[in-house]
Length: 159
Image (cartoon, rainbow, N blue to C red):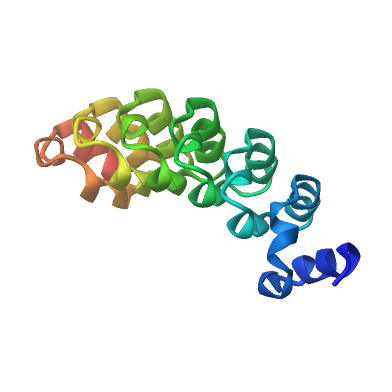
């Protein structure tokens, strides 16, 4: 299979027909990700650590954070970009960033249900919970029990 046919396969979502050797080639993976961000899932481990490739993919779809290397899931700028695109990608962020108020705030503004993946300490944070509920009233179920009885939280959830 030549490079053009391989890229056509990627455009069509047929990732498995592409020879593994292509997924080890940085220039090919960059082109593949431009055409279909899900190609990141099949990229060689070494390329999943490459910030330029992951950033390119995240511009299109925050959910590809799932396929990035662990080291990039600890990178605040990478995770922030991902959660602004798709709040639910907080699920794939490193534990340390699930405790980061600025990251979680951006995530819940994008999708209130993201509160589910926040550290328990932030599920007790009134401003975070209010933002989550403002985006989606159902997010109340992920808040700490102590806040589920708070008059301001209850009032916000009824709006």
